[in-house]
Image 1 (tube, rainbow, N blue to C red):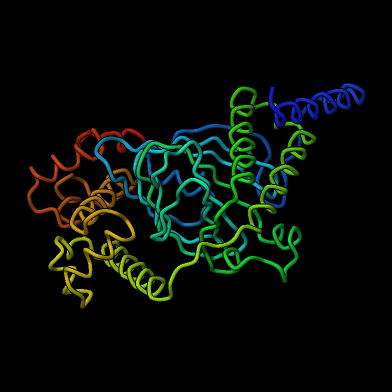
Image 2: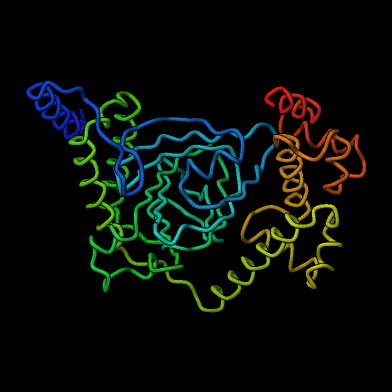
Length: 356
C-alpha cells in the first residue's frame, strides 16, 4: 500500500477506535463552509449535470465528437477543498469561476502531447493550469485522458500562502500555466492518482473526518508547492492575440445562445458581429480547436436538445423546436442530431414527456 493509502487507513483506524469508544456510528456532518465530505463517483451524460459536479460555476457544454457525451468524475470532498479526477469524451466548456474559489488542473498519465487546452493554452505533462476566483475559462478536453482538478475556497489559499504572496495565476480573475519541477510533478501525480484509487476502492474511508483531514493536509501542502512554481512566460503580443480570440469566442457563443434562429452559418455570424470569416476561423482554431461552422452546428444542436428535454417546454413537436433554432432542413437536422447524441430527436421528446 502506498503512502497516502497507509495515511488514510491509519486515520480510519484511529477514527473507528474513537467511534467505538464513544459508542457512536461512523457518520460526520457536512462541512458548512462549502461541500459535504466523502467520496463518490458519477457519470454525467447531459450538460445540465456538469455545473453541480465540476464546481466551476455556470458552464456551457458542447460535445466535440459524435456519440453520447460521457464525463466520469471521482469526487473527494474535504470541506473547503475538493479533489476530483475527471475523464471525458472530447468536450468544450465555457464558463466563469465563482469569485470565492480557485482551480488547479493537472493532466494525469497523459502522453507527451497536450490533451487539454484552457483559454488557448495547451496543458502538457509537467504543467498545471491555475485559475483565480472569478476567472473566465474556455476549456477543451481533446481525448479520453484523466485530469485531476483541485477546487478550493479562495480564503483557504489566502490563509495557506498569505494574501500578499498570492501568485499572479490565482489572483482575482487571473489564470496561467505553472511549469512544475520534475520532482514536484512526480510527487503530485503519485499523490493524486493514489488518492483517487484508494477512494474508488474504499469510498467509505472518506466518510470519516480524521481521514479527510489527513488527505486535506496532504493536498494543501501539494498546492502550496505547486503555487511556488514559475508561470509559463508568454510574449505580450501573444497574450493580446489570445485575449482577442477569447473575446470573439464569447461574443459568438452569447449571440448564438440568444438568437439561434438567426445565426445558421458563418457568413451570417460574421456580419452580425462585424468581423471577417478569417478572424472567426483563427479564433476558433486557437481557442477551441474546431471550425466555427462545426461549433455553430454543435452548439445549436445542444440548444435544441435542452429545449426538447425541458419539462413544460413551449415546443410540442420536434419540427417546432428545430425551426426555432434555425434548422430548416428537417431530414438533415435529424441526421445531425442522431450523429451527435446517438438517438433521434423524437425519442428525446418522448422521453421528456414520459417524465412529466
